[in-house]
Amino acid sequence: MKRTWWMLSLSILWASVLAAAPVFAKTTWKANSVWPPKNHHSVGLVEFAEAVKKNTQGELEIVVETGGALGYKGPELLKAVRDGLLPLSDMLISGVAGDEKVFQIVTLPFLTLDFNELRTLIDVCYPTFEKTAEKWGQKILYIAPWPGAGIWTKKKVTSLADMKGLKTRTYDKNGALVMEAAGATPFALPFSEVYSSLQTGVIDSVLTSSPTAVDAKFWEVLSFFQPINITIATNMVNVNLNSFKKLPKNVQDELVKAGKEMEKRMWDMVAKLDQEMVDLCNKNGIQTVSPSKEFMAELTKVTENIRAEWYNAAPPEAKKLYDEYRKKVGR
Image 1: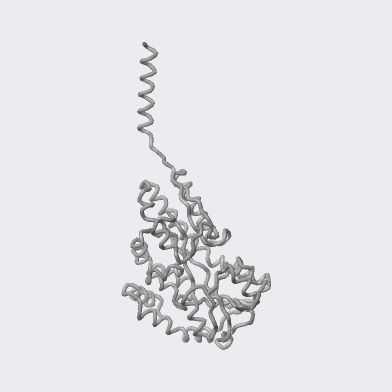
Image 2 (image 1 turned 45 degrees about the horizontal axis):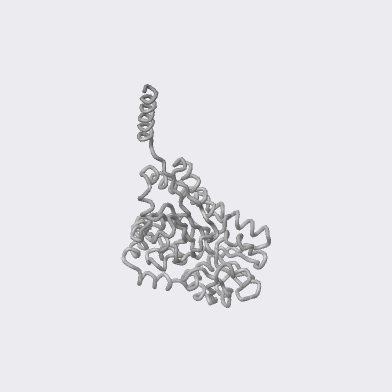
């Protein structure tokens, strides 16, 4: 009788302890990156995921899939996160700008001429971008830059005249318009076809940034790099808002905190990364040809209509961002 009473008391005590203990239900998400594993955006996303797992004591684990392994392409990522097909994804802002006009401001050629100006533009746009993301059922965790987009060519380019006749692979609408304005022919090719197209002469140049040049080993098929910074692209890492809201408050806070910390690290390292990637290309035989002030003035002039046409068709909130940014940089 005593033994039965003792066991019953012990069972009640143990049940009370379990009821009082916090419940750590582990959540696992897959995160998408279309970039190769060694690309700085993929590396940053992995580091972000590791920080989240550590700071939540494993309550939220984010498994990063790189290289487009999940089967999603750039332009569809805003919809994929909205629809919950992906709880979290990195996405090129210009890549999803076809779905949301306010994002198109980051695609305008020669709007930002260096990383400081780009940071100013993003700071101006951030609150509006956040509201836009929320409209699409998602939350921006961080925004991170690429090095500037220059022209990688087989022949040296030092003037607008040298650009005439180029057959250039471009990655967005405005890049194509810039090439057309300069007298070149833009080609919208999947990046997987760029190397073979350079080998066979389908194209003779590429508009892109230095990490992509390293990823594709451009030194095997091209000879020159002109760092004209047509645009300086940015990515955003977004989380599905419903998925985010299902997390405990402490986990939400750690997710946001990790995003802010990763954003700072990505911005702090981009200029150094750019130089390292260019140096690697130079070491392997590509010659960097710094553009003259005259060449940059020519390019800025022939692309005036691209910026003007965008402004005239832009929604009011986008025009307001454009005007505020121009006022801050003084041009």
